[in-house]
Image 1: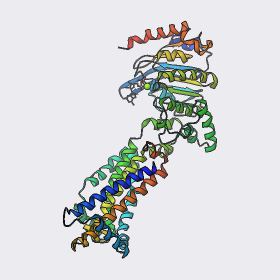
Image 2: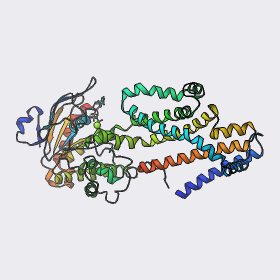
Image 3: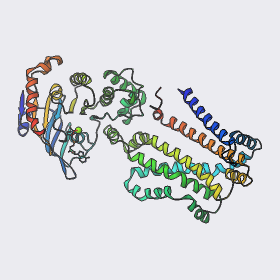
Image 4: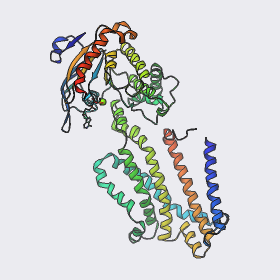
Length: 266
Length: 253
Ligand SMILES: Nc1ncnc2c1ncn2[C@@H]1O[C@H](COP(=O)(O)OP(=O)(O)OP(=O)(O)O)[C@@H](O)[C@H]1O
Ligand SMILES: [Mg+2]
């Protein structure tokens, strides 16, 4: 396990290939300063978690990376290109699913492709593939209100996967599902990171979840938010998903993160 | 399910007509005919053709007024809902229109536009348009931000956001505004025939009242209600063909 002080990040990992770079980003909502001079690198093909107390600006940062919100200062680069708005290289998974209630599962999953002008038969073939991949085969004609919360989030995930973006932005995707489903999702997410060769940026409230799924964990401080610490778990990744929660390093990191965050929780 | 809802509709119609028949037989007022008397009068008007002649006259301002209110109303509503400046400029007009006592406006309309079709169309529009505009604008403004964000993140153009997100999301409330607007338009059409010049169905109502032929008067009133119900059902059919997903979730069994 290695901990890197953000000030020395650039020197410590010069060779690391970043898919997304956040440089000195600040964001003000009126006179509320949500982010202040935040810098963070997201290595390609890895999953980085953003962990921090409620209201510290995690969603704000994710939306700025997505191009949905303008930053007040600083710069975002995806694959070396400066972000000025939403792009085909990024796809978002929303905390509240953001499904179209009037469209069935198939159309919801294909919606990203529909907006890109992909022909109907082609986009439905792609959507069906990802519907199967997230385990919703047979539900193509169902409407969102006929699905459970966990199934709705699978639709949101399939929609994000089907546009084949290099960077996936996930805003607390599992917070609205029950504990068992959540554990299954976490395992699926690990498999996805391994298979899809994509860069994942993952916001969560759960320390255990962050340590379980992440290659890199960025701990944010409360408003105005900066990165206080970056943690890269190293040893338990290769040992198989079933052993992670018993691994001493896993338990140590969970404890350590809790120790550094507890002072911000009254 | 289909059969059951049809059965319930017929049942409620039977209860209403039964109550009408009983109330007419008591009678609660010498001017209140029974259901059967009224239906006989209606059949008579249908066979001698008076009802068709009357509707040929009444439908002109009604259909014209409702068509104008529907098209212009929804368009204005979309615009007002999308632009804060436009709302500031125009929304008060429709709020005032909705609150204005129509009876007081009719003399002014007649003074300006005469007693012809134009004034009657205006009355229908004044009744029908405000609720359509205000409902549409409100629905547009209340489109959930998260699905708009979702569409933008998947590269939707402004036009995509309007046609694929805002309009479908607002459509149930737009259509409920249209339903209210159409009902109000019917009231407006009859009101204009009673207050401006007696023509069409309004003429049957006022003439039969003047000669105390109450069954005919109630037959005319009944026919206009029937027509309104048919119109509203057509509107529902239109909604269900245009926005297939809208009728989800009502039928639970
Ligand atoms: N549209 C907005 N207008 C004004 N202030 C906002 C807006 N959105 C967020 N904020 C403020 O910015 C801060 C960061 O919000 P953000 O939603 O990014 O937090 P978060 O870390 O995602 O919190 P949570 O973990 O509870 O989801 C909060 O204090 C919030 O009050
Ligand atoms: Mg959040």
